[in-house]
Amino acid sequence: MIKEVESLMHKYIAGVDPFALKLYENISCGKRLRAKLILKIASDSKEAVKLAAVVEMIHAASLLHDDVIDEAVTRRGTPSINATHDSKTAVMLGDILYSKAFYELSYFSSFIVQKISDAVTKLSVGELLDVTYSNSLQLDEDKYFDMIYKKTAVLIEATASSAALLAGKNIHAYGVYGKNLGLAFQIIDDVLDITSDSQKLGKPALADFKEGKTTLPYIYLYKSLNESDKEILLKLYKKELDNDEKKWIKSKMQESGAILKSIELARKLGYEALEAIEEDKSLDLEKVIKEMIEREF
Ligand code: FPP
Ligand code: MG
View 1: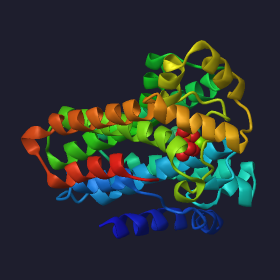
View 2: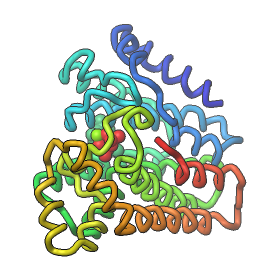
View 3: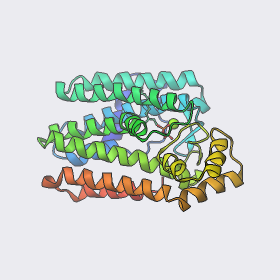
View 4: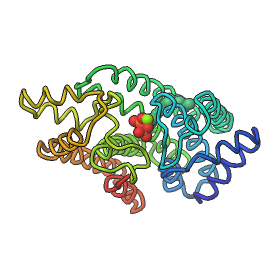
């Protein structure tokens, strides 16, 4: 089924412009979490493949723009479009994917059109918050959760509830499942930036703090440090780290329990996601949560 999603995306983009298709073919496809979720929730719906293609095109557009904003030269182990071409090309390819996705989205029922488009507005606000918070150390947990809800969880929430509508399932319960899955996904992403390596991640590791992003493990870490270690951490903020500084951050993250605490919260959100759909328990959706928490990239 995921192959059908890939070929529908290909068909949509081919129908727009051959150069856009050529550029699109340079993007590696990623985990396709959102598409898999739709196919698992609405496996019997004829519309599932279409919705999955639409959502994955929106997601791909958002990453093209995000790489321009973050000045990222790699994505999923391959050079980003802004690196192989330039930022203008990446922005325009993003616009093509995004607007074509919305054209195809317009054929769905108004609940789905409104859910997804409202999520994309929030996604953009989330990205704006991420950029704004990166200007100075942001240690407020509530602000972090609000930002990751908008930047990551809201589209997964809208995706899951839209798929539930297609399948005649409980829209609210699947929305809660998607929201918690999305929050846990972003927390694990933020943990992996610290614990994983560049090869596995397909992008530079330990990059968030250098980019000014104070993610949940950093918020927990800062709160647990004594005054002199707090000072050391503050000096490393937004700095190109040498090997000793990288080691210092990694060991403090483990010693203080900041990593474990973040993973435990992601696990708790994962359980809450499954609790929400308990009446309609599915091994497949349990697997999505487990694999997402235990992933290495
Ligand atoms: C990745 O975050 C970025 C996102 C999840 C959302 C980006 C959203 C936009 C650019 C706005 C919406 C735009 C369109 C065209 C729909 P990250 O930088 O923390 O993760 P990364 O390390 O994978 O880059
Ligand atoms: Mg980024």
